[in-house]
Amino acid sequence: MKNAIRILAVLAILFVGCDDNEYEAPFPFSDIGFYTSKGTLNDLQVNLDDYVSFTDLSQGAVSHSWRIDKTDVFLEGPIDRTDTILDQFIIEPRSTTSFEKTVHVQFKTSGMKKVRLYNTFNEMVVFKGNRGDVDYEMPAKKEGDLYVIDTTFLVKVYPKLVPKIKVRNGDVVVNHEATDTVYIEAGNTMEFTDLSTIGEPTGRSWNIRRALKPGEEVAENPVVNSSGDSLANIAFNKLGAFRATMNLSRSGQNIPGDSETYVMNAPIRVIPSSQPFELTGEIRELEDETIQVPYNGEFTPFGGQEEFFTVMVNGEAFEVASVAVNANDATKMDIKLAAPIYRPDVITVSYAGGSIESSDTREALPFNDEPVIMSTVNLIPAAIAGLETGADSWGTFWSNKGTVEYSTEQAATGDYSLKLQIEAGQDNAEASAKFENPIIFEEGKTYIVSYDMYVEPGAVGSDDVETGLFLLQNWNFQVRTVFEHPEGTWITITNEYVNTSTLSQFYLRILSNAEKTTDMTVYYDNFIILEKEERP
Image (cartoon, rainbow, N blue to C red; front, top):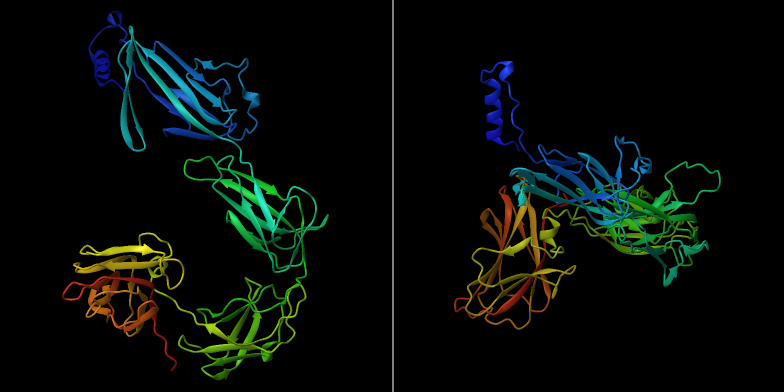
């Protein structure tokens, strides 16, 4: 921010031959500059009771001053980074104006605050700065015989976080500020809602901790359940006494961080459930061939129960190698078989009833011939496969003539499907989805490609109409069908694929009949590509 002509003039004077008796001091020059300890953002951001340092780097100013809001104070430096109590640095008597080159301003109230720098010069000066990677200039304004640079720094001061919560136990809103014990049956959930707004929080974490007795030492992690959701339904599966806490936080780029913890006064006591301890949800095979059985409560660790389980694979009883409580989720049992299983297998599980109990002493009820949902590792990203983001993973192809959009009118699973609509006179309806990370198919392996399709009742001119799913860049492969499908019901289109081409984009289309009288709406969902497995 130097005046180049002035600098050259000074250098010239220094190097032109003059004896000591003829020396004349170089004429003064003017320049404007300033600095803050928070950088050059449009809005500086700090926590309540924090301070910001401001430095005036100007040269040759006729006058100079800082002005602050009456609720804020100037501090006397130097201030060490480790100093947390700043009242000892407040300059007394307090003033809203300072003529120091560097000032430290402490903000004693929250809100949008102003720090004003006012400089005057005998000549024109121009401040050259950069804000958000954009260069800008701020020339002085002439007022009478002087040139004025009047700069106001905006500082957003965040108030301290104030946690505010609501707790619901079933249909009852809990008075969490009272000290009365809240009772809940094992296996039930409590609803915790974060209602905090003061301090602009950006997140929170709920934690359920085992309540310690006076003098009791923590032998293990006391947190038995947690959640980061603003509305959290937290299950209580273990018997005993517990405390609920919420840690409220504020974080983000250029945002001053803060956190505040709220401890719920009301203790929580989990009592034995009055409900039967039974199978809940679906039995699933995991990718590592573990069969996982969910119950509506936590299991007490057990062993030697394999003889009470029968696992039928394609109608044949397979030997059960082990049954144990899942290490990460005690509401699930893990079953391992002695022989491998494959995706096309049809598997059922039965439990005849042994000595398995819940953590609250309920006996696990038996069940018979429950089907197992086999593991499927879909190679397609979830946003493209199931469309549940309701976003823009799918879009129109460049030559599309019809309508392509996300829809909640029909869905095979979840809430969303992809809707393609073609009207009379249109050539096609075309959609595409690009893969951020292309799928690489392995040589010698067969893959199953499938998707679900729903034809809306009342289709016109569907004879000779085709729909096709193309795997680009291999235009030769397509799951292509003529519309010989029932209307008003979801069907699954499936084909096998053997190729080593890289898949970088889906192309989905409906082609009109030759007369272009086609008028129909079709929904698509559940796009799947998985490696084919066959039992040897």
